[in-house]
Length: 97
Image 1: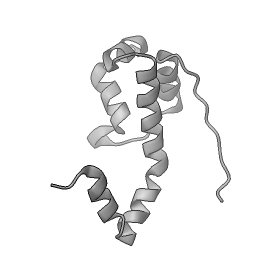
Image 2 (image 1 turned 90 degrees about the vertical axis):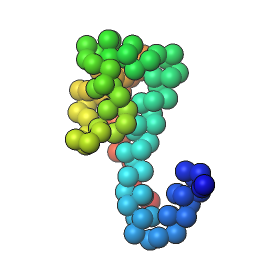
Image 3 (image 1 turned 45 degrees about the horizontal axis):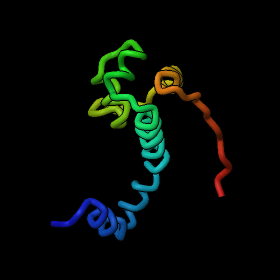
Image 4 (image 1 turned 90 degrees about the horizontal axis):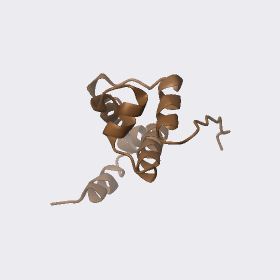
């Protein structure tokens, strides 16, 4: 059985897959940032949910990218999450190279 990384490496040889994968890179980075910030703060999803006044399932969906009803989180939601994990939300525009 192939590992996840092995499958991704194989799939990336398909130009259509690579294009779609690249298009989602920024989104994946955001969700990695959320997870890393929560873990660095030593908090569980339940802890963050309590601090934000929401349900644990909402935090799970947020960290997973929205779930089946995929939508982008609002800036207000990201700000509340950042505050709940002891961070400050920063949004920047970076010139494409």
